Each structure stands twice: as structure tokens, then as C-alpha cells.
Length: 345
Image 1 (cartoon, rainbow, N blue to C red):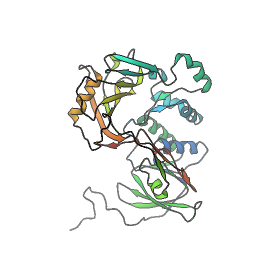
Image 2 (cartoon, rainbow, N blue to C red):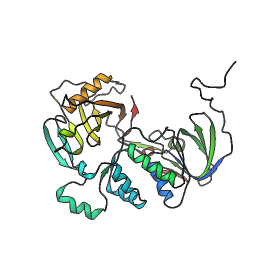
Image 3 (cartoon, rainbow, N blue to C red):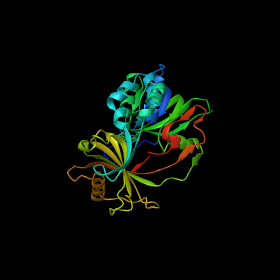
Image 4 (cartoon, rainbow, N blue to C red):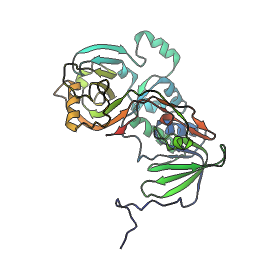
């Protein structure tokens, strides 16, 4: 006898939305930094709505990370700056950007970074009551989403935005949403719709807002890894460490590597850049090849390197010609696509 389920055990998707239309003043599509912070800022004015995301939860990879004083001032206005400082990495550990052979080896140059220039301390202090902090999306997104939920926002993950309909640029917006776990489709009617759904924004696609595209800067591969480098960092504190090893044979996809601190000093993002002119965007290095190159960048065989994730992305330079259409607004990577932005290998 036939069963009414998909191979994965879930019910098949419905052909049309069913059930009552859900009413809300605000519908935000995307629970990343743009969408989740928007919900928090609206909540600070007593406004609530629905925040949806096609993802199963908040970010599992530490993508964007530098939170500058201007951003911290905004978070300070709604009482979230202390949480970001407490969970992130303090400015003092972001002191330098370095150029070196490897993390344990010879250093060639360094500059003060992120407000740590001794001669400019007064200038930074006069400009803002806040300081730089390194707070990757894996930390920032839960802080924002939890605040929005506490203030009355309804949060729905595993919920994909399908399309919207409206009779006029300022009229009510009816959005079709699909629960990706069950396949069930339902509708949400809102006064405003916010497309914060990333570089492949379905909201932007339906609005057909033109994009201005500049030449891209090629392929990059992100390797998220654990490696305890505490013994090497005492006099090398910094967020970014550019490693170059011209004498070492290397694959074309791994010419130079930027080692980015995620958590001091045992969690890192190795941003792998290919040789100039490399165009094989389908490259998929093996685990062994990746691990070998990361160990070369560490430069200390006694340090264990554990690879957590590997992903690749194209360094885009794209911006939308406008960010809104009537009562529909787009934010974040939906309208400006530049580093970081990536896809899984």
C-alpha cells in the first residue's frame, strides 16, 4: 500500500498554502546579523513581528567577525554591548595584523590594528565610548535572536520564504512560507517585509532590483580549525596573520593563507588564497591535502590541528542600485555582496 511520505520520512510538500493567514506588522526574512539586529532594534521601540530563516538555526561557522565601535554604539543603545564584549574577544587581543612565514616562525612585518595604535588612543577614545571587539557570527547571532525572542518576536527556523504578493507598493504584503521539515506551506500578511536573506535573496530576486557588479577577486577557501597556539602568541597577538612560504611546494589552490583568530588562541579560520590567475572554481582538495597545508602554516609539528569545516567562496564586489521598493526593504548581503560569502565544498 502506498504511503503518504517522502523518502526522508517527511510528508510531501503541499501544492498550495493552507490554514489561516497569519497577521503581523513586520515579517523579516533571514535571521543573520542584519535580520536579527533589525528585530532587536524594532523591539527596542516596542514593535514585534515574525522573524524567519531557512536555516535550521543560527550560524555554525564564524563568518563575519569584526564589530567596530559604530556597531557597538548601536548595540549599546539597546543594551547588548556588554553581552558582545563578554562573549567576544577584547580589543587588546586584536592588537596587530602580521606578515610572517608561519605562525610559529619568522615574522617579517606588523602594524597596529583595530584602534590599538598607541599614538591614536586619544583619538579613538574621543570618537566613541565603545571599542572594537571580535565577535564572530556564531556568537553574535544567538545574542541577537535571543534578545528578539525575549522582547516578543516569533522566531521560526527551517522556514523558507517562497514569494510575496501585494496589490500596490504600499499595500499589505502576503508572503508564502514553506516549513522545510514538513513541506507545509502557509501565508503571512504583513505591513512591511524585510529581505535579509543573504546573497541568494529570494526577496531581491522577485523585486528584480538591478545589481551593480564589479570584477570579482577570485576564489577563496575557508578552513575552520582548532589548534592551540597559545605558546606562540605571547608577543604576536592579533586577529589577522598573513603567511607566505615561497620556498615550499604548494598546490595552486593554496598559494598564501591568512590565519584569522576566532577565539584566542585555540580556534582559527585559515583563509586560503590561490595563485594569481587560478580559475578552477570546481577544485575540491582532500582532507589530507588541506591538513598538510594548514600544518605548514602553523609551522610547529607538535601542535595538533583539527579541521572542523571546509568551505569555498568567491570574492564578490556587488551592490544593489536601490535597497527598497515601496514597503519592502532589503538589508545585508541581499543588497551588498562582498567578503565574506561562501558555499560548502
